[in-house]
Image 1 (cartoon, rainbow, N blue to C red):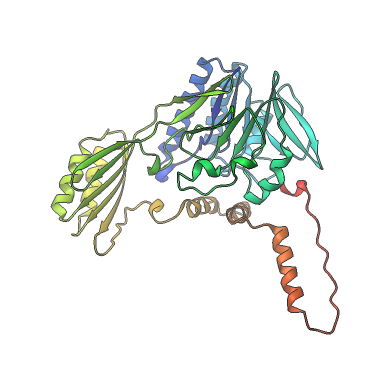
Image 2: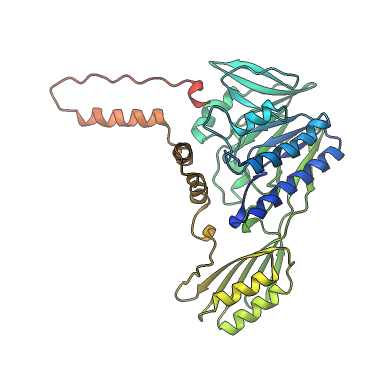
Length: 413
């Protein structure tokens, strides 16, 4: 048995507000699909964030259809779960559209039973757990969820025999070394033969007994932390290679990382006392870069620099540049600074959701905020009711207890 494990494809991501970067992400995925087909895989898994947004534009949808159609034409079923970027609060999502076109099979808890050659459904309380099937291998998964939701849903996911668990979550024992917030621990995971995970953009593998826990990483370079090369220039120039991007080919439950060609993205840090010294160092580094690349540059200097001149020079040598100027004593950021330098990943994702400026985007933003801060409506209602009860203590009149509706799994689908 051989399968391809993809995650964090982020189709439609116009990085640095550049439409052609979305083309790069689509090209990387299409090339990866070609490699997977040439490897003669039996099926493919997408562990979340196929899209960068829950409502992809027509061009992005077309890119996904084109890539996934190649699998369909070769008789290769695709199993997928929704990630934090592309899961939808709507009844019908982009994943469901692709499922209706016969291009993928959506795993997870659903309101209705789904049965086909590739999936089967198991009744769990008042919902259905849709599982993938390939010969004697069971493929169980679910969309991205908050910590408190995972406590409810993970115990209900009980893979049997030769099984693959597909999730879009961060595991503490893996991300502790990456300075990323975590969703669950290894001890919380149901037993499986292979853990096909997504959400962590760096390729990581960990052995759990005889099983493998694997993050293939993102298919393209999502931000400067995932740069192809890092340049540090203070006293002397130091260059550190970044990690490759790609996906995993898994044969008999053993993963093999397959690198996919991507556009170079350089992260450059220059430190100098004098303006002339800073410019000289920048020119030296610039001459070492690929002209089709993107550079994210931070220049720290004690003197004022001509930011426009530096940016124009960079853009004349590179496909794109983002430059951040910092005074050693007084921090000065030019108007050419990337918005990523100002906002955290959470704030950037929230702004991205709100750009739609419609009622749905507001609901999505509220849902996203609740997930980020693990706001449990049931617990919140209980807390408010408790506060009211405590405030009424000492009063002579009796208070009627307010009943609360008990939520079921159906409320979280």
